[in-house]
Every structure is written in structure tokens, then in C-alpha cells.
Image 1 (spheres, rainbow, N blue to C red):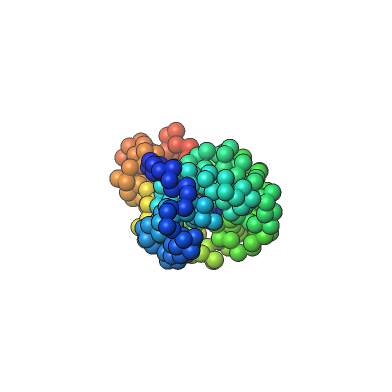
Image 2 (spheres, rainbow, N blue to C red; image 1 turned 90 degrees about the vertical axis):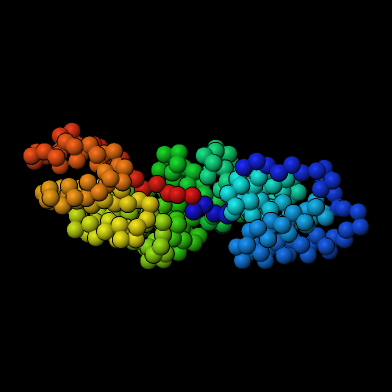
Length: 295
């Protein structure tokens, strides 16, 4: 996922100043409680304390940045950007601010703005691997795999055990037809984080591309056994493995299941191949790689 890591709230101008009778220590106390709740992933409590801190003192150091982080975790991306922009006015030299805001921009598909924030973070903190990773995500989503690979290499130089970066680099290498190298990165990613979202599926696809069908079937079977969201895709590719191995029976069992789950390519194959005496699929659909990073 991206490193940070809906309507904007209407803030009264009074929130920009310390409230009458409030002590700066009161705002700092609430901010500390917000940080502790955030660390404990209690984002409702964290937001309440952050709101209180900012209400007591709109200039409390780190208040808007923290509240932006909380809103990002709550998927209130528009609200997060508003707070990050206010935080930038308070401290334009906070590299982590640009990492966080860049992550939101990239998640929203605002890639140019996200890359601009990553550039700012890299200029301020050139040895932080996170902005390189985030910028790689933006380049990947913008279909610039060569640039994504350069940033991923740099990110992994700075943090070798980053499962997310290894996973994305494996995907990028696969799309650049460097399947063996990509396979090694995906396997390394899964060793670090066996629950890596999309890891098994992407590993199976690379094994399929390398024509290692028995191994690919084993990976797609693991995906199916876990019962995750990419079931239709896993059944489709497991069917394709059997098809490549000239096993129409098992291929069609899997394509029928994929079709039942809504895969349109599988529906076409079932109708024009499985339900006929054909030995080959007529005008077999050209399957696009489905190894997209989820943010």
C-alpha cells in the first residue's frame, strides 16, 4: 500500500487561533492522546483528540499533519488533503508531510500532483525510501514502468526488506517481460509478508507466463482456497493452465466456475469451446495482465 501513510469539514476561523482561556499545554495534551490513539488504530478517538487540540490552538505543531494522517486512514481523502495543505503552511520543510499527501494524491489518481509531492519529499529527505516507493507507484499507474523500476531499485537500496516494494518491482519486471527476475522479487516479498495482497495471484501469473503450469496451478489453488476477491481470475488462469496442458475437462470445470463468478472472457470460452466439440478455443480472448497494485 502507499506509504503515508467525503466532504471537507467546515472549520470556523476561530479554530485557527488559541481559544480564550486555553493553555498551550492543553492542546499538546490532546495531541499526545491523538497520537497514542492513532498508534493503537483507534481512529475515531484519535480524530476527536486531534480536533480538540486544533480547536484549542490552531497553531499546535503537528496538529494538522496528524489529523490529515487520521483522515487518510479513515479514507476521508479530501479532508486529509485539506489538513495536509494547512500543515504545509505551518511547516513547508516537513518531508513526511509530502510523503503522506503524495500518497493521497496517487490514491485519487492525481498522479502529477503525487509525483510533485514525492519530488519535494526526496529533495528534503533523499535517504527516505518511502517517497521513492510512492513515486514508483505513480509511475506504474501512469504506465511508465522504466521510471517505476528506477525508483523501486532506489527504494530497495535504502530498505532491502520492504515487501511492498519487492512486490511491485516483481510486477513491473513481469510487465517488462523479465519474468524470472520478477518471480524472484515476488517470492522474496511473500517470504517477508505471506499475506501480501495479490502476491500469490501475481506469482501464479508469472509462473503461467514462464509455462511452469503445474507450479502455477498450485499458486492459483492457494488463492482459491483462501477465498479472496480475485477468485474469478484465479479460476480463469487455472483453467488456462489446464488448457495449455491439453486437459479440456479440467480446463472447462474451472472456466465454468470463473464464468459463474462473472468473468466475461470465461463466459465466451464456455459458450464457444466448453459447450462444443471444438479442440481449440476459436478467437481466444487476449487476456490482459491483472497484477495491479491495490492502494
